[in-house]
Image 1 (cartoon, rainbow, N blue to C red):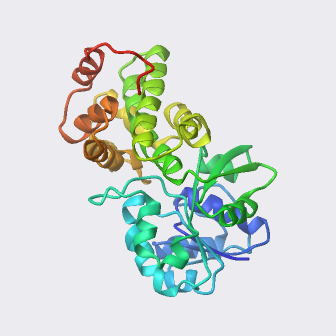
Image 2: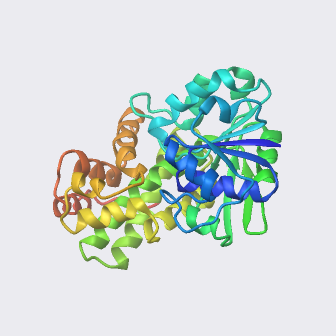
Length: 334
């Protein structure tokens, strides 16, 4: 199988490495020409996955048309806010029978679509109808270092899901399938917002009680939105719900958690983002998920407070007081 991985950030690079090591013909597209050149010449990606040796068989290019032309499987791993632009540029060059997948986690600005919604608008029906979403608790560096990991692939086309499952599965990456595309996508997007909240809590000096409360009530928010949008409630007890939420809220490799830690310690958002080389999707997702909750008329108080802290400069202490002072209610009512 000829594979193109579109996006040479840390996750795209890790997935390209995995696929190339399985002896697929793999080309990795990088927006930055210097990144593509480093991968070709030195077999490493010092900009986004420093210190990890890449297979000599892994090719790279900064030419998107070259990357996707004639490929059987095209895996898009660009940041969610760039995804439509990248997919639109790639679409004319895709083979009619190409299998497309997204491994990005986010909600598109303005349209409030998940990445499968973007694919449905950009690609022709014969391609969009078998699209796949890849998600789950997976830090790129740990996958690149072959640490045991489990993820899910979601598609409404069982054959497409199984094809991607077999392509990605290794002795260190266990891959499950599901048909709950929207549930998988919402879990992957909203957990980034909750991770910022838990980071803020930790940065303010609060303990594990507070973190546990934010994770569990954050999960309730994800499930509430998911069920309203037609997802399977059980999805949120799985890898792309609870699993990804715990990873992102507690793991030191979580960029969203790191943003929250800095904010909780008193730094301003512009200052925090200026110090980062990679995208923290939760910063943009806080706005889009909040807007989606308003559109769907779903109560998401943690998401709302993160949005207000990021975009209205609300003080973390005041946001905490707002959450703790809410009307008392039953836990079991979604």
